[in-house]
Length: 453
Image (cartoon, rainbow, N blue to C red):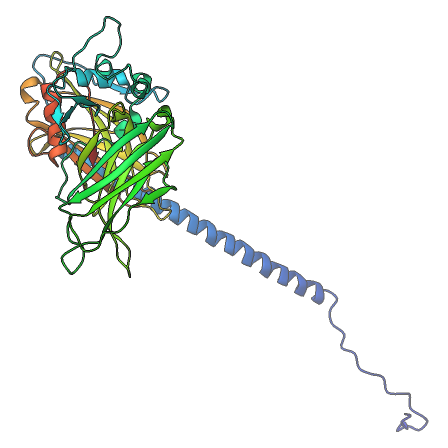
């Protein structure tokens, strides 16, 4: 469109107006955006580093605090005991993992001084190794060959006993428990037989007696679950006997394809349950019998007291005690633990053992094992020696605590036992200490159930 000029003539076409911006403005604006981004990134990194530093400082402070508490505890409670005639240094040792934890030679030393065997209801007597010996026969036969004397007492001419002559008894010790049941939950009667021609183990579950009532009616519906450990996948069960506390099963089970050498490495597990239709079956009690203890040249019959299920299972600890009066050395060996209670979120624990030598209520000396990460079945194989005069051996005790190590916070107690000649944490612990005193210079090995407190 043409617009007339006020001065006359035709005006030029109207031009659009363009704003002219400084040349450096766009460049400056882009640089500011980059600066903002870099500032945000650096600020985030600084915040992250600050958080990491704070967490590390918290962890370091917790470690220092726990170490300071332990030092204060030791400073307050440790009392130095002077021995008048000896200045022996501490004796620490580690058992070799390449050798069996408990050899048949060590077992033989214990069996050699075992004394009179215990009688069983079936008319036979059994030594500490658990091998049945008919009454009237001597268990003290000797041989000029330098072999284990205790193992020569077994009927070595029979193939069922040959395997025991040269095997470690670590499997046996995993399931030997000579402690009395904490409560009476009844007994079970069963018999064993071995068919050498067909390599078959024959088990007969006969009856139960004086089982506890698990139902509101004042009775139970008991049945027996049978397992040959360590195989837990294949198990057999008896029929359920309704409304009775004295069931008679009279059932026979055949385990075929078990050569005697293979059978000697198995443990018979009988677990009595009370059947419930609408809820989980209740455990009444159980029995473990290592089959290397059984003399299959006969047809042994057993009455066994059922062990009640632990209400708060903390696990078990295998220990050995030995005292040498000549040099006043008390030796405690922590061999291994099994089925420890899980304390961590991952279902495991980081166990270690702390041991206090005590005289009365006074703590004298403390020892610790190494920490084993993420396991409920640690093998410690650690030996601690303490200088204790003979006249004080009946007055002292060993407070053994299995702990769970934690990086943050206090270490938690998994379970403990008190080994003492008087007022031990249980009958098993007291007997272990008394056996050590009555059998000096001998290593006495025993499993103990850990107590929660």
